[in-house]
Structure formats: structure tokens, C-alpha cells
Length: 236
Ligand code: XBP
Ligand code: MG
Image (cartoon, rainbow, N blue to C red; front, side):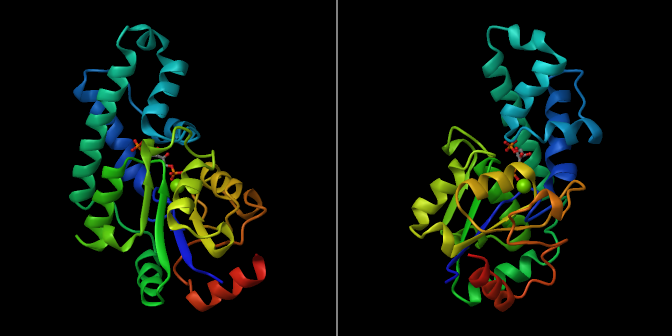
């Protein structure tokens, strides 16, 4: 029986990276007087590392190792990341990031059917709130029984920890849920938590990249809850 839908945020609810996160990182770097700039091609590679602080750390290891030799390197990264989060919130509030096709309708349908809703993401909690309120309305964060985000687990996706944290709080077995993901680390995290996964691939990925997915769809636009329920019943 299908009881809950668990959504990833970045790349699944909205195309946040290119109009939200990436320019916000660059704005924070510019504010700090750093000569770093993440163009779309570089950023595609950097997305393999989930989590903004982890991504900056990984960038430094590859391109600016001296930065990590400063005695206050961790604090400097945390400060850059706080500035990035503020820039991201402003961009989202200014309407630079829209929901992906079908997301609004699926969430509305799931609420009408009394399915429980949750979020499992590596992005910061503030970013989840700013995106939900800007796109679905001021009350929409309360539609989600559990919001798992950011640093509440030490090991970010592809580790299953954030999904396990959410499942424990939902207090339902993994098999009664469907997770929605777009990326390889996200899919790996959900699968490792034992969840059936519907993938709407981002970044040029295809169905072949997600062999154990319940379904791989180009978007959530045509998602019908009865079909999803039937698919879930046969696939688990
Ligand atoms: C999303 C991410 C995040 C954002 C940045 O991955 O990788 O790190 O790019 O978020 P997923 P923060 O969709 O798999 O959760 O800067 O707030 O960490
Ligand atoms: Mg994602």
C-alpha cells in the first residue's frame, strides 16, 4: 500500500542549480574577493559532490589547495556558504527558480488523497523553506510531515542516511513509500534506503543510468496518482 511520497528538492522539485545555487555560489565568491568562478561545465562536474560546503571543499582540493592551508579554512568555507545561502534565498524569492512540470499538480493530488509527504535533500533547510514558500505558498512547508535537509545527518547523499532519517520520523516501512529523484547520488541514496524510486533524470542522464528505478520519466507532468499506486503495487 502506498502511504507516503518523499521528494528530493534540487533537480526534482525545481531546476535550482543553474538559476539558483550556481550563481549564488559565484556571488558569494565575488563578495569575498575570490577569483573563483563556477561556469556551467565545471559545475556539472562539481555536482558529483552533494552539499554546498562539501562542494567548496572539493573545489579547493582540485583548484586552490592553498586556500585549505589557511588556519581558518573550515570557518572560511562555512562563511562563504552562509553568504551563498543568503544569495540563494534572494534569488528564489525574486522568482528566478520555478517548479518543474507536474510537481505542483502531483503534490496537490497526493494531498487530496491523504498521502503523507516528506522531503529528503542535501540542501540547507533555509533553502527548502524559501523554495516552497516562493513557489507553493507561505503555508506549504506545513504540508510536509518530515523535512530532512542539510547537516542533520553527517553523511550526505549518496549515503542513505537522510532517507533513513526521514523514514524513521515518518514511521512507515520503506516499501510503502515512493522517493522522487533526479541524480545519481540521490538515486543511490534512496535505493540504499530500500525505497522504490521514480526518477526524472537531470543533466543528460537516461533510463539506463537507473536500472532499479520503479519508473524513469522525462518529467512528472503526466503523473497520475492511480497509475503511480498501481505501479508501486506491482514494483514492490
Ligand atoms: C543537491 C545538492 C545541493 C545543492 C547545494 O543534491 O547537491 O548541494 O547544490 O545545497 P540533491 P547547499 O538534489 O541530491 O539533494 O549549498 O545548501 O548545501
Ligand atoms: Mg536532486
